[in-house]
Length: 625
Image 1 (cartoon, rainbow, N blue to C red):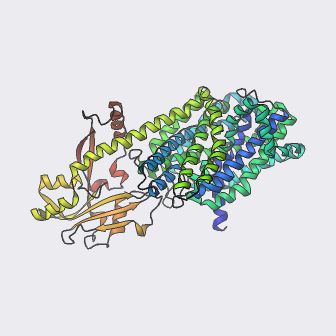
Image 2 (cartoon, one colour):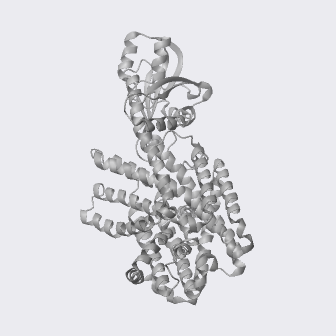
Image 3 (tube, one colour):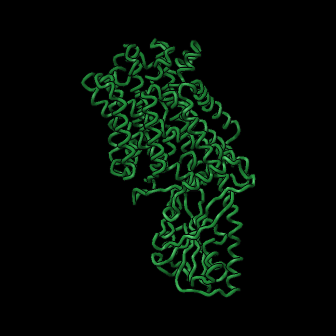
């Protein structure tokens, strides 16, 4: 299999899990008790199917596949990657930069809400097929969903490499099956094909505006997961994703939705679970099994996405350091973040046990989806105008046509805040508060730290003039700010009055791109004197690259006369700060306390920098907030 076909198959397995399983609950939600003003009549069914089709065309095909996926950050997608690109491109425009960062924070916060709801609603909707295939097992739907989700989160620590190899074939089978399920009903009632005309959507809106507006709050569920096309672009590239969408996923979804619409026209009673009613009785139980596998894959994709977003947020200084475990030696994107996994697991179980059905959860789902769509479109409009050089009328046209549609979908879901839409808003509010608190607090606390450390170049000059005694060996000082003195190094000289014969100060510098090639990572500076054994190494990293100090040193060996030693034999000296609350009104007291809690939850720096524990000396200091 050539590289493009392999990437296409991989994209089918990872990128389209969420949007590919939306037929399980989209139309069921439209015709549910909450939306009982939508009738299984000819006008309403044709109007709803037309809305679903044109949402797939306008939002997914035109906007994401055609426009948004062109806004890549060195091939990487996702709202934080897009924000990092904008920050890099908009230097000298502080207002636009602040807007970009704020939109990205809101988008990332909504994604955490999505990461909670997707596994719950997807797995519940699949297992609910038992209510049709085996009604006697109705009472076991929630327990079975809990067992499946518990197993899914339990295996995260071992990585998904082996499981992931099966994702593509399973999802390819899923799309073939859902297309095959819809086709017989479409052939039996081809009248449904007229719903492909947008006139039926407009007719529905004009003749029954309030009903259509409420219906749009559920219609948007048909495009859940569309942001994955953009977020996972770095794993597969734009071309394989677009090919997979056009060649298999889009046709399969359209055939399935048309089949559901045709069946509802013939048999209105099937609105209670239109997806599973598509299958003949003998195939319903196997379909439940296949649907469960597909929803587990969809859930896995969003969980992995939450890990990636968390790491990106950490690198962009929106969250404290998190313990990140690499689960693959070959794929940098395969990571496990224990604290995020634990929070998601508890949250998902609470949702399943509280809402107990996919229909009840659907109200909570739509708001996070539409909010994310609007935020990503806003960032792309900004980049189109400020970076791509689009004319104002082009930006306004995209804003009016696509933004107008997304705004209507968002407004339709705002009406459901009381019945569950509050959930993603609450999750997003907590996440935004934490991110902005950490960003503000770290600037203050680490600004104080910079004052304590002092200028590196001035300190090195003082050391030369003072003639401090040298002792044998090599000491490596990981340090966040290459312009200042590592406090551990300064303290060692102040208290012990000695300095090692070779001193290497290593700083990781985030450059706002996903990956930095190995050949371009290392910058070496002898700080004005090549004879005193003090050298600074700057390792340029992207937000998806590991911060591995020993690995950076191995790349630096030989680039300077001072860099002629074995990194595995060096001593590492690490500065660790303890944050204490001060009396200055730099932040509200509640924010100060929250910042201290977040700082205490930070990952061990020895682990996050991959330092050998048996050769690492930790020197503590205090910073007042």
